[in-house]
Image (cartoon, rainbow, N blue to C red):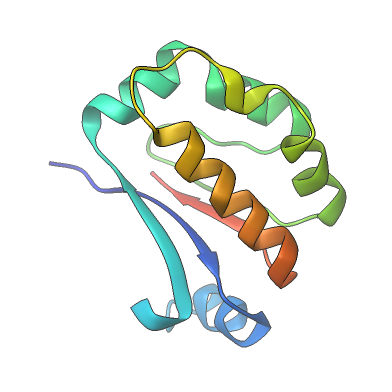
Length: 111
């Protein structure tokens, strides 16, 4: 089973460590997407809308990041988290974006 991970560094030091693949689990806020969660988000167009809004390149088998404060704010102020899904994944993802904005870091996607 493939790992699909979305994470937020807790501070700038953690963000720096993440850039060098040296971050510890304690430095990160993480969500591991299950295959059904990923497929559902993919099918409702969540990643397509996110890419359009932020000019990110989130895709399967790719790594991407959203680090600009303006992009984080735009995502949080959008209707993106109101898409029709069958579980709480959008609520959990919204919390990640809120944490990234509050901590001055970013949201990192490892697919």
